[in-house]
Amino acid sequence: RDLHTAYRRQRQMCIRDSVYDTNDEKWVVVYEDGTNGVMRTLTYDSSNDSFSASSSVTLKSGGLVGSSIAYDTNRNAGLAIYGTGSGTSSKVYFKKWTSSSGTLTLGSETEITNTTYGSYTKNANGAEANIVFLPTRSLFIMIYSYTFDYGFGNRTWPIGINSAVIEANGTVTIANKATIISSNAISGGPQTMVVDDSSNTVLIPVSYTHLTLPTICSV
Image (tube, helix red, strand yellow):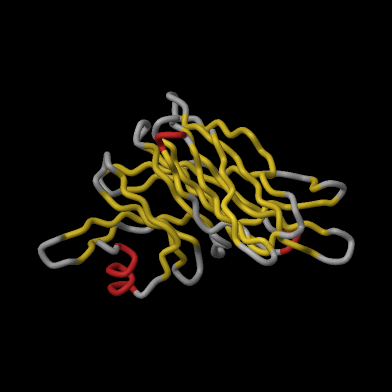
């Protein structure tokens, strides 16, 4: 079933991302309601091809610059990654989320910080933010862009990557803050990732100045 098409038809909204919570048996969506970035759960009724929605919870006041969500089937919890601001004022955050009987609970907001790109000041940029979960490793992979001031204005090129784990006690451990691409030939960041569970590999397509090539990240 095309979740985005069906629910957008009902609510006329722009869904940024969605994931199915297998424990709560609900779809979880993230979108903008015109003012804020919000999340809510959806229940699909196949008898009349429609969705019923829970009350929304605010992911970020003031709207989002890119957002994505993923679900840990082992911990019955997920992470949301999202951005705010623009230029060198851009920031990227993540929050843990859980769903019970259709009610979403969000954890505290954590900023992803990276301070330098070579000798330049840079900020994580959520415009191309994305997150996936690797079940065989119980590991989240986050990607996003950087905006940096190289002395003649701002550019948004390199791609940052982080891994994150929801621990048994419910805390989130984030690691491996790095750039996987640092070439100024990049003209566009990633907008999706493909997971190959059998080889613990994430395929990340990136756009260079004259062509689009995949980047393979083994974890």
